[in-house]
Amino acid sequence: MRTLSGIKPTGQPHWGNYFGMIQPAIHLIDGNDAYYFIADYHALTTVRDAEQLRRDTYEIAAAYLACGLNPEEAVVWRQSDVPEVCELTWLLSCVTGFGLIERAHAFKDARAKGRDAGFGLVSYPVLMAADILIFDADGVPVGKDQIQHVEMARDMVGYFNQQFLGTTDYDGEGKWLGKGLKRPQALVRDTTAVVPGTDGQKMSKSYANTIPIFGSKKTKKKAIMSIVTDSLALEDPKDPDTCHVYSLYKLFSTVDEQEALAEKYRAGGFGYGHAKLELLAKSSEFFAPMQEAFETHMANTDHLEDILQSGAAKARKTARQTMDRLYQATGLSGRKVGK
Ligand code: ADP
Ligand code: TRP
Image 1 (cartoon, rainbow, N blue to C red):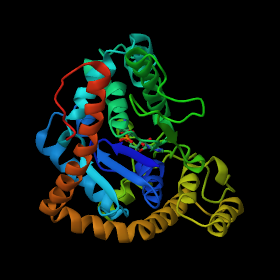
Image 2 (image 1 turned 30 degrees about the vertical axis):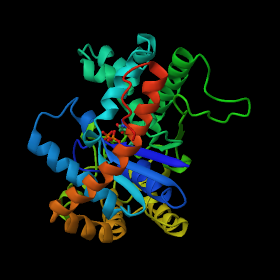
Image 3 (image 1 turned 180 degrees about the vertical axis):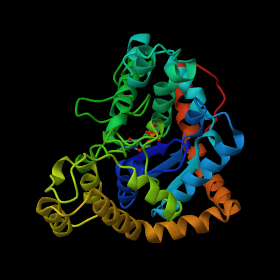
């Protein structure tokens, strides 16, 4: 199976990214044909600082590698080094009705808040579909919030194949025939539904409630100490199951360790500050080896760039082959790009 996923370089990678996407994606490398990239075109919907974008791009690359992605076993690249995705975005735009776009969460959100969505945001799900479809990906490991985007990519496969080939491009047994686009599937791990942020909402860079995977102990401590709790006094017994600190602790601990912490909550005489320190200790221990690897990679961005360029060369070859096929399907250029 070919697995494919991406993260936007819009700030420091956080625990939500790790448990929702990076860790499951890395587990999937073994036995699969894995393609993981840094979605810098997507970041341009909001980022306006070139230096920052370059740095955040390296941070995501370093994060992938530090968390276990071996560039010999998986293809890793920067989205804008494979500009063919923009070409496919146009083809998909031509078959996608505005009705589908209007149902996208990010677009609906912008409208509901009275903000002008901007054409980049309108087109965001189309670009994301192009990312997936240009590589004929089968499985897309993402957090729960991205399922809708993968569903939209599936819809676009249907429109494209039907309109250009006049068929679904699948046979009666559900086997893809390989003339148009292949239908992908979202791969979402149940256990990692949504990682809560310091305020209890979904952890997200857009909500400024993240806890970074990497960074100084001071920054992480500050973020963990700011996790919102109720106002029970230190001596009061507490309910672990309604506490965000406890939910986050579960991500890093064994069942026995979780039970031990739950006991302390229920017994009273144990404050949220204590629980936060336990979370800090456990998470720091968990991420320590990755932190070290991350720093080593960030200290040598030339090497990171080499890895990204060699990944881009492989990814681009696959993307060009797909475009060649789609030129045939649509009647566009007679030039054979895949050769
Ligand atoms: P953000 O919301 O912080 O901008 P991204 O949109 O870049 O994060 O997400 C990158 C990947 O991480 C996606 O697959 C997304 O589903 C996953 N992810 C982000 N936040 C969370 C979360 N709080 N819980 C689970 N998965 C998440
Ligand atoms: N939209 C995704 C996010 O915000 C990032 C992304 C862009 C992506 N293209 C993708 C994820 C293709 C999976 C596949 O997290």
